[in-house]
Length: 384
Image (cartoon, rainbow, N blue to C red; front, side, top):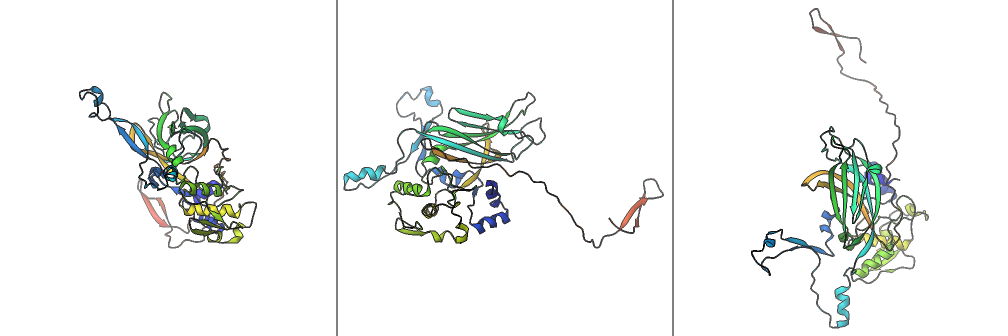
C-alpha cells in the first residue's frame, strides 16, 4: 500500500481508514499546522532568549550606536535549579546527565516535500494559476530544483520528492523550504511564492524526539517498514538514560517490558493475533513491545505537517501551504533507505449512468409562434 494511502485514510477516506484499523496497520498523524505549534516549539530541552543591547551599561549615552536596533542575537539554553546531593561525586551526574553533547554535531537531513496546497498566484501574466517549483536551503548548500520539481499550471502541485542534505548544529541549524513561480514576469523572471523555516537544532535536542517520527507498528518489510537508524529497543534505552530512568527489563520471550515500575504487555496493543502471523513482515516481540512503550511515553509518532508559506516581504500573509516532513539522522550513522512517496499512477475508469424511470415530469415542447420571435408551448408524446 502506498504512503499516500495512509495520508488519504486520515483525510476522510473512511473505507481506507477502516481497512487500516481492521488489519492493525500503522496510521499517520496529520498536523494541519506546523508541528512546532503543537509542542511549544520543541523547547523542552533548550529555550530561546533574545539578546539586546543595553545603553545604560558602559559607553557614551549619546553614542549613535545605541540608536541602532537593540537586538544583537539569540541565546539558546536553559536555567535550572538543583538540590545538591550530599555525595558530591553524584552532583555532576545529577546536573549534567541530560545536557546535550558539547560541540558541533554533524547531521544528515532528509526533507520530504509532497504537495503544495492552494498556492498563491502572484503573477500578473498568468490567470489565477502558477508554475511552481521547489528550492531548499541548508547551511551553505542551495538547491533550485527547476528541472526535477516544476509543475506547470497548478496551484495544488504534487511534488512527491525528497532531498538529502547535511549540516552542522548549532552552527547552521535553519532549513529553508521555498516555492517559486517559474517565469512569472514578462521578463521571464521567477517569483518567490513563499517559504517556511525550520529550526533543526530544537528538533534534534527535544526529548520528544521529532528527528524521526515513530511508526506505530514495528515492521521489517513492506511499504511500512521501520525507517529509523535505531531500533525501538535502542531508542527506549537511550531515552530512559537521558531522563534518569533505569533501563527497561524484558521477559524472556520479549512480550513484556518493565519501565520505571510499570509493566507493559504486547497483548495490550496487538488485539488480533492473526494480523501478526507473517514473521517476514513483523519484527521481533521485544522490539514491538519497546515501540509501544515509547508511544505510551508520548514520543513523536510518524507524521506529516502542513506548513504555511509566507513571503519575507509580506510577513504574516499566507501564500499557501506545503505538505512535508523532515527526518534527521546523525552523520556518523548510515541513514536508512528513503520512504517511497511516489503517488499512485492514474488508472482509467469508466462511468456508467443508468436511469430507470422519471416521475412527475411535464413533457412539453416549444414551437415557433405566428408572430416574429414568439414561441408556443405544447404537449409532446414523450421525453428523452
